[in-house]
Image: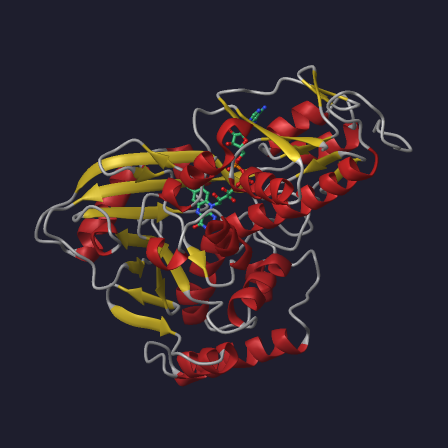
Length: 432
Ligand SMILES: Cc1cc2nc3c(=O)[nH]c(=O)nc-3n(C[C@H](O)[C@H](O)[C@H](O)COP(=O)(O)OP(=O)(O)OC[C@H]3O[C@@H](n4cnc5c(N)ncnc54)[C@H](O)[C@@H]3O)c2cc1C
């Protein structure tokens, strides 16, 4: 049986580990933190907080399949809602049931908050994107792609969707990746655009069941310091390695092996996300999730009512994506508090409960970005939301990357690796 090391236990590492184990490989998962989950985990609280509010969508098929594989029923831990972007003061865009293309057209036409010209303008633009196969110049920004769309459409739909999906403001975000998100969400099968909102603490979706599933194959609290060709992970022999740690850690580990790969990984820039939890006993939103209008004194783009999502009543998660300016200037939580008081007018004034700032929440998804490839060398593969691919940094991108790296590493290990006992099994070379 071949031995494969998985370094990092976020969603990519979990996906890699499960894929490899299911293919019959002997795996060891090294995770430096005391728990699995990486960026998508719970943090201490009663009930626990999420390390940033996460949203899944129906198009996350591999993530949903992985949850099922670990014994989690997505129907029980996620609340499925048709795509809707209600604002505190208007119903917003709402997709009716039915085939996604038709639902999109019907939803846009029924949007009473936009003048008819705006609705038709969006439908014509969407028809153009569809006709071009959701492809555009790699150098184009989302703002440039949508420059001719009516202002209302950009403000109420394009800008919030872009910053939510790519965690990058429309003026700096890759139009090609944005089009791919639209294609996946709106044009790839029934239910793809549905919002899937966690009803349980984030760790219960994957990290906690994966911990039980992996059992003794898991080494928590174990940071990997070095990899040597052959492969050796901190001196321990493996036939193949999946690097499922963050891009900065992967760059550090790979630098002595492949300087070009490491330089590409190291060159990625990051965008922060700030999640501000407010507490307002007795208050509720008109829907589990509302969009908010971002502005110079209004940082948050979305708010989630945990009382309607199986969590603590009166707990609200305000999400500030693309938060670099707020992290630089400070005062984000206080500005969110003021935004909530202005826009939601709750009878019980909210108070700040918890503020979670992830400075490196995702890579900045800019036009023409060079991302490092999954295959580094024979037997050495990278997995993570940042590896080259058509998607932005999401849970689904991480899971897909984990599965792909596992298939590559598994094939390498099975074909030619050296077994745990050091016996060669027919590799042309196993040095990078
Ligand atoms: C606040 C926030 C909100 C988000 N919202 C959404 C959302 O709504 N929807 C969505 O789809 N995505 C969202 N994302 C993105 C999503 O969380 C990530 O894309 C995904 O979790 C990345 O998983 P990963 O496995 O690639 O990386 P990570 O989760 O970063 O996992 C890497 C793991 O490697 C470990 N590690 C690092 N170095 C070493 C080492 N040397 N040895 C051992 N272990 C190591 C780390 O401890 C970590 O556990 C959000 C992210 C944040 C931060």
